[in-house]
Length: 124
Figure 1 (tube, helix red, strand yellow):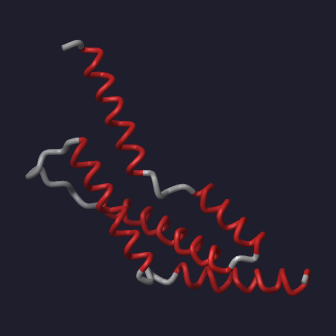
Figure 2: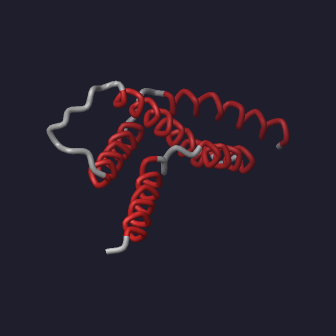
Figure 3: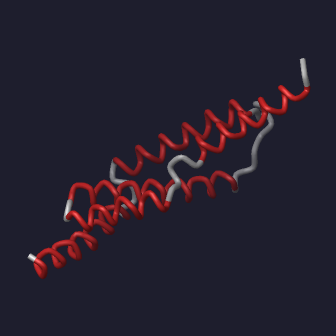
């Protein structure tokens, strides 16, 4: 086995890991969706963007909380374990946001929908 192949395999696994761990944390995507919803006056898209923002916020918070917990060595660390845990964490946070979360999405939606209505009442 060539050493070069091992290095490229590890690079590939690190790329996969980074894609799975940061796939939901995309501020520019949220900003784009929010702007599109505001420009079109689409309340459904606005609600979805607010829910995605809450999921993004909860994921960042969850990641920081999890980093504060000491790790046990009962199950050895591996790239596969990291990928599995990040996918599990992503789904947990996604479900939390969709089931009402902590109320950030609702509060944000209420505030932005007022602005949306005011914008279209003035221009319409």
